[in-house]
Image 1 (cartoon, helix red, strand yellow):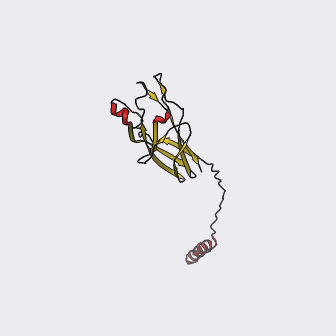
Image 2 (cartoon, one colour; image 1 turned 120 degrees about the vertical axis):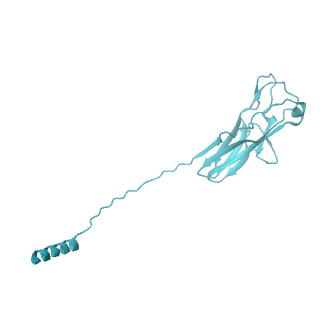
Image 3 (cartoon, rainbow, N blue to C red; image 1 turned 30 degrees about the horizontal axis):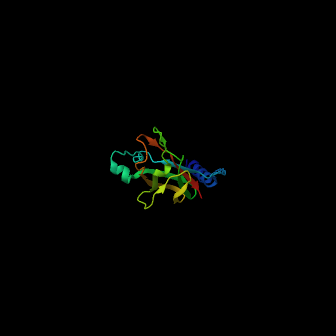
Length: 162
């Protein structure tokens, strides 16, 4: 019995010393083809200052300013620039009196100078790659020259990669 036990023990030791771990590996190359991308959008729920109601003589005389009127989000994989312009030279209106787009001004929130809108784009702000926010103020100052009615103007913000 002792011989069988010694033989079994020798077989186990021999097997353990000759056991080989086998492994296999595979590799592959993954390619990312990145394209230049840019996006600009109004941040949901922030376009709270895009309506103006002129209901007193002082509104007509001094104009109305809506601060923090809208916030925008720019996402880009390169540095970017944003310009602003009016889509048309005049507001569209229910009135027969044409009001020029220059009666509306825009600036970065809490800035010092308004850009009077025209169809010629002007620089508004810049940013680095990634995501960036900016907020604008509007100033409407039609004076007493225009008939009562609803006037609308499309303001175009254009984000361009640098």
